[in-house]
Length: 100
Image (cartoon, rainbow, N blue to C red; front, side):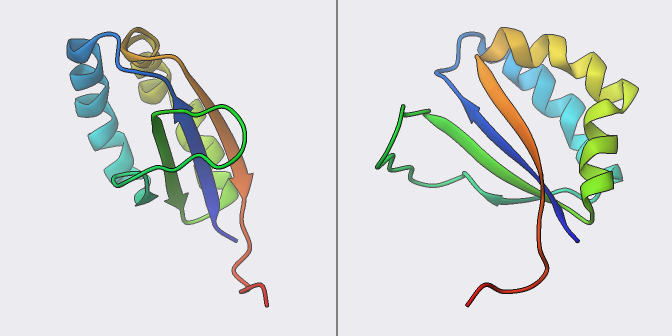
């Protein structure tokens, strides 16, 4: 089953830190075969608190999603992510079945 990261974040506080985080994450994402499946377009919050930055990232498995987060290189990038903007990140196990 696929794994997912759901990332919800605030306004950018440090553009240089975000750039550094993005550069670091690009290599990690390639290694873990990450696919950004949502978050590069419009966001409409219809319930709850609005987060201006929201992303859904897909991994081949739940285990891969967890491994990526705990990867030492990713852990090193978190310093820059924290300076860039406040955020919440959840790791979810997906289903390969389509709900009907």
